[in-house]
Length: 336
Image (tube, rainbow, N blue to C red; front, side, top):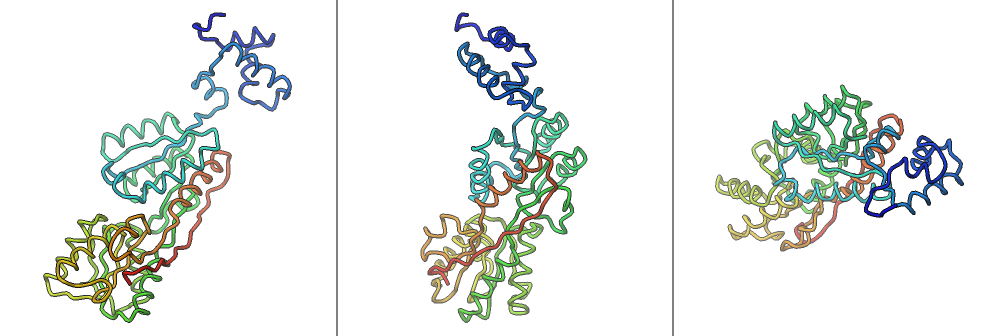
């Protein structure tokens, strides 16, 4: 047979002296076929340059062997926030040892979400891992109604999908309380919190953690909500200083926010940590690149992604949904 002509399953079956169904089962590792027969047919398939058709294989095993990594944030945020990179890295590394191919599924605009729903309806993926479940929540309702195996990489307020989807997230209340206690132990008595969007579930839990420790020492007018970037932190801190606020400690909702806070304080001739202590959140690489190096709360983001991948594989195999909450850790550096 010419190497220029693509071999077919029928060619493999003929060369092996078996039926097409037997050849298909052997190449798809069916337990109904003996190991010796499977190996003989695989060897023949290799010799005649047979490449399995992906669609045919999907029909044979009843699976697409793909897992969608659903992102409802804009791409600009996806590539600028290291949190998502850590999630994706954990997921893809864990799936690299399996037969499953991770596929990035973007759904930040109405058109993209409509397209995504069509793929859900077609069962284009065996499972979905949502790495930003607090946005585009209507997609979660679709996944629930279609009974698509789904993992949430992050929490939702009230846990509306408990026992429906698997969930893995880090304990934001615990992490925020660690940061607040560090401020108290440092002797700071007038703290401000500069956080991400007010409706973000992680932000809501971090406020709970801060106030659990600080109570009335963290008044409402010293809790500022903004975006997650360094420029957001810079502008929020400058606004606080311009209106006459002079905290001796700042609890930042992300390491990027914290870096902007430090820059704004420097513009007002306030030194960190002599005049103001600053604690970030996440322990991204930026934490060791700012001056002074940033005290922060470390989230096990890579581990979350890895566990989400394992959960997705378990759901595909028929496991019941589970919820796992991971611990956070205070990493103390020079900014405290």
